[in-house]
Length: 126
Ligand SMILES: [Zn+2]
Ligand SMILES: [Zn+2]
Image (cartoon, rainbow, N blue to C red; front, side, top):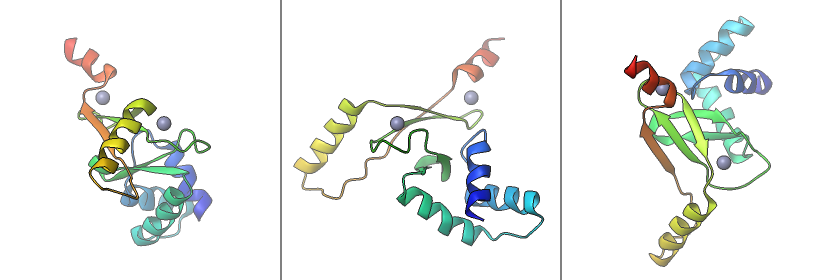
């Protein structure tokens, strides 16, 4: 079932919630899949760096570069819900540095930007 969930996640156009994935996999396999089991598998994916959680959308995306361990900055479109991601290790390091100075450890920076994507902005203008 892991492979099926991962396929559904990487095929999704926007961040998928556990419920979205449970539904997609139930449909594609003809077996009912509970969102709870999807959550457990998503946790495994996140721990293995294969997927990332978009906190502000309560949803997940497949990790675009599972081989590198950095803090992705996600751009979340308020209109269509799609997510883009940018990497700015200097910014992430500076966030980590400030958190450490404040006495925080085991850091897991969550940097997300909400806004309107280029496609949706174009639609607005038309
Ligand atoms: Zn990244
Ligand atoms: Zn958009």
